[in-house]
Image 1 (cartoon, helix red, strand yellow):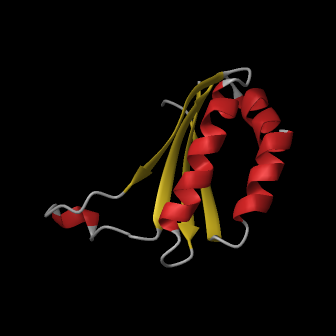
Image 2 (image 1 turned 90 degrees about the horizontal axis):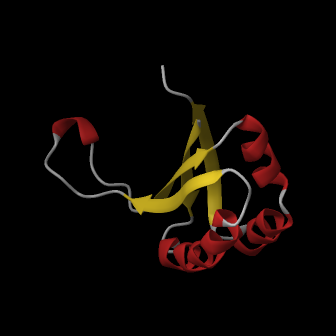
Length: 102
């Protein structure tokens, strides 16, 4: 199993616009071979010291894939290319962390 933590930094004030587009994408991704989880999350404002405060312009996407090949196929899928084009003016930066269980 391959896990992905994607931190998507959106343009200030555009998080809701980004999430609207993202939620339309989710069913297509779940239809892909090897997708076990694909969901967006936003920071919860807490008093936990280590958190360092909620980031209002970040959407974190947690993903689980059968294997690395399925993830790579996902990244090249036509609906992903279309999505990236739709949100290109809403996104400042994307950081991916691909991990597996130790």
